[in-house]
Length: 146
Image (cartoon, rainbow, N blue to C red; front, side):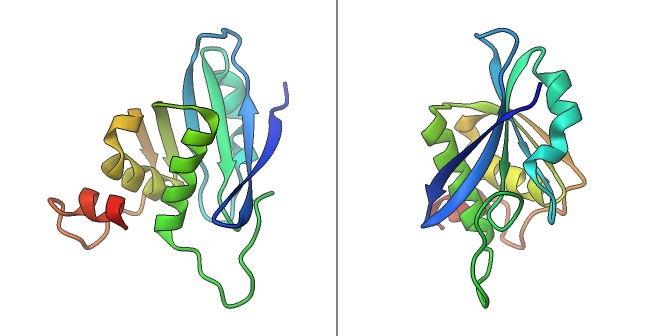
C-alpha cells in the first residue's frame, strides 16, 4: 500500500509528509525522520512493515523531497526543523509518538526528544551525528527556548 501525501505550511514554507495508515485503527504513531539529501518516502519498506502495528508518519524536511525550498542565500537551521516537527505533531493532533531518525534525522530526533521529552514514547537514532556543543544540563531548555 502506498502512503498518502499531505501538504501543510509552517514558517511560510509548504511542507510535505507521508502517512501509512495502520491495519489497526487504535495503533500508536511512529514518526520517521530522514537524513540529509533524502526524503520521507525512503522509509517505504520499513513503513510497510511498521504499519502492521503502527500509524507511520514520514515528513519531508524543509528543502528535501516534496517540501518547499528556501531561496538562494537562505539557510536551513536545526531549530526550524524542530519547530516544523513540533507543529506537525500539533497539526496532526499527536500528543506523543515513537520517534526514529536516520543521520540528520537522528540529530533532529535527538534534539526534539531533549527539548520535548513529553512528546516522545520511544527514541531510535540511526547514524546520528551527536549533540551540540552546549553543556548537557542547559541544552534542552536552550533548544526549547530557541
